[in-house]
Image (cartoon, rainbow, N blue to C red):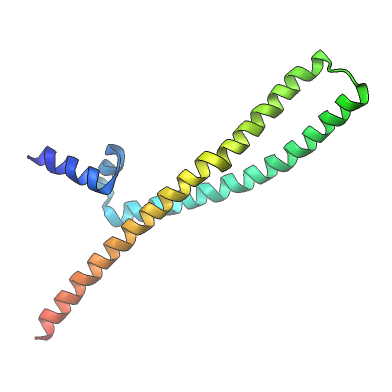
Length: 134
């Protein structure tokens, strides 16, 4: 019975078991607040790093293209640097295409859950106030 309720709650909130464990240990409000702050800081860090790496990749790619055009022949010594540059381009595009939108969705989901918790808390406080006022 308890397990069924746990699974039902997990499916309703669309949370992983790891997230549910952390919610039970920390509490709803502190978990969502901490996750929003952590993911926001992570996003800022990766955005800055991605911009810096992107600028450097443009410069390195330009130098490699100029060297390739100047020699007119593709030399074996270009293979390893080219592979490294292509790998960094793939990682950079992967951040902006896949991971950044995923982080944005999680931040939005956690913010909505936090707003819901705040609304429920405010409603409880209103009921208490209204009952004490009578």
